[in-house]
Image 1 (cartoon, rainbow, N blue to C red):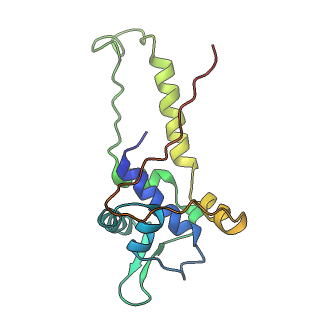
Image 2: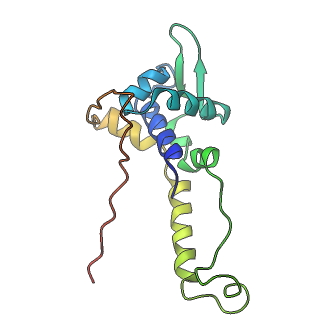
Image 3: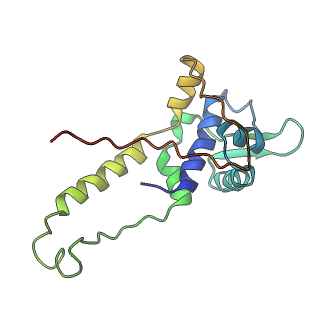
Length: 165
């Protein structure tokens, strides 16, 4: 669905969403990286891109750091995705050239269109408010992460489960 760079940008923004208080609380890139178990240089680069994209604001010096540029409910995964991913508009037919678009759709056409639609809805409809709610209202505290910049963070992507049948 999206690459590790986007996954890590979402992780960094989710941390800023957890502490959202109108933008008064600011976190350093080191704080974010260590809290999420991400490489510090990578988080610094991601935050620069997120800042250029208008999703975070940063201020240097003592008392500085990063905050979301607007409430977490107003920032969608799509906005992050667009900063780090190239949208692939091709609809490559698994049968190869000359099948889809040259006549009847291939056997996979409708299913592929359905999947693309689901991913698009997920990116458009998912925002960072859930992280604020879980941290501030429900008291969810992510498991502590060993802040070892030499050991990369494992991906925490949801495991696929097989459907019976």
